[in-house]
Length: 519
Image (tube, rainbow, N blue to C red; front, side, top):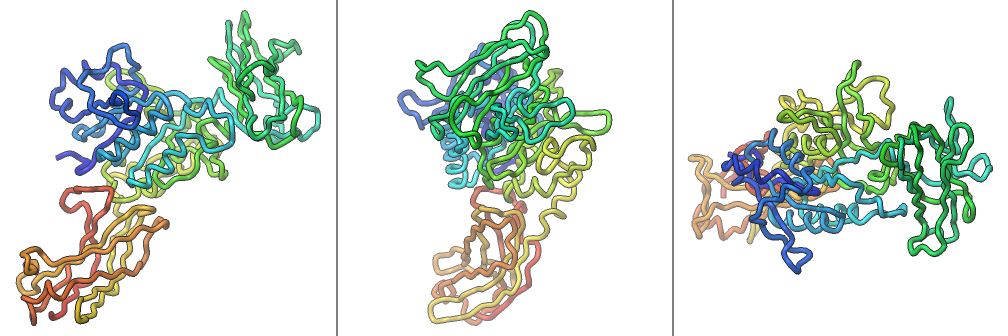
C-alpha cells in the first residue's frame, strides 16, 4: 500500500534530465511517476508526456525526485516543469485538480529576481490564492542567495548621501556599504529599486577597492526602457576585496525598497541577509512552508552558509524550518535548499490529515543547532525532531475528542449536538460524522433505502487548534421509521477534505462518550 493513500505528491522544478534512464531500469517505480507537459495552445492545461525528458534537460528536478523517492518508495508522484513563476503557478493549479495534496517547489533560480518592488510577487500571490482553494500544501526551498543578495528599505542615518546597508556598524564594518571579494575575471553586480513607487529616485552604484580605487561605477541609462535597474560588471585580474556602495542622487532620503546582488563569487562578507530576495515578498500562508538548509558542524548542526534567511513583510523570521541540504545520495553529493525541501516534504507526507505546517511547528527543535548560530540563521522553528516525528507524534497532536453529546427529537429530525476538539487543523475543512448502530448487535442502522443512517457536520477555522467547538447534525425521522423503539448507539468518525481516501484507522476519534438513546 502506498504511504500517501488517496493523494499524490507533486514536484515543480526546472527539469528532469536523467529521469528516463533511471525509470527504464525500474519499471515498478515508473508506474508511480507521471511526467506532465503543457498542452499545445493551452496555458492552463497539462497532459501526460509519454516521452522521457531529454538528457540535455536540467537534472535539478531529477535530483529532487530522488530525494523524495529515497523516503517514499511507493507514492504516486506527478512531475511538472516550471521554468518561471507563471508556469509554476499553472502547474500548481493543474496538480491540485489531479489530486496532488503536497507539492515540493524548488525552481533553482530566484523567481522574484525580476520583481523589484516591495509588493507581493506573482508566485507568492498564486500560492496564497490557489492553495487554500484545494487545501494542498507546498514546501518551497528558501533559496541559496544569502551570500550574494541583499534586500532592504533605504535610509541614510548619518546624512552623508550614501544609502545605509545596516542600522549600526560592527567592528570593521561600515553602514554605508557591503564588503565583497571579487573573483578574477568578470563579476556581475545588479542594483534595483522600486521605481514604480518612487519614479523620481535615482542612484549610483560603485565598487571601491580597499585602497580607495574605483573599480567600477554605473548609473541608469536614460535611454533604457527598464527603469530602476542598474547592472554593473566588475572585472579584476586577481582576487580583490572591495566595498559596494550606493549613492543617492535624487528622490527620497529614506523608504525606498531596493536590492543588491553580486555574482558569481562576490560572496558579500557582510550582506546581512535579513531581507533576502526569496523571503521578503512572502505573505504568511497556512499552506506554505519555506525550507532552509543545515549541515554538520563540529559543535552541532549549523545553518548552511548559502541558505537564505530573513523575514517576511510582517517581520516574521524565514525560513520556517531547516532540513538537511548538504547530503549524499546514491554516491552523489547534493547541496542546496532544493534538497532540504523535498526531504521534509517526504518526511511529513503521511500527515495530511492535519495541517502539516502546524505539525512542523510542534515537531521541531532548536536544540541540535550550534549555539553560535545567530537567531535569524536558526530559522523560525529549527530542525525536525526525529523522536517526535517517529514515535511521539500522538503526544504532539493529542486526542481527537468529542464531548458534551446530547440529542433532541422533533417531528422531522433527530438533532445530535456535540463538541469537538482536534489540534493542527488551521484552515482545513474537516467533517465529524455521526452514524447510528444497533446497541444490541453493533450493526449499522439502515434506512428504508438500505443505506446506513448517518450524517456529518463540516467545520473550517482559522485557529490552529479547534477546542470544544459546538456542532450539530440532523437525521431525518423518516430514515428511522423501521426502527421505532430500538435502542441505538452513536458512532463517531472524522474525515478531512484534503485526504480523499485515507487508509483504515488513519483518521479516528480517540476519545468520545458512549451515548445511547431509544428511537
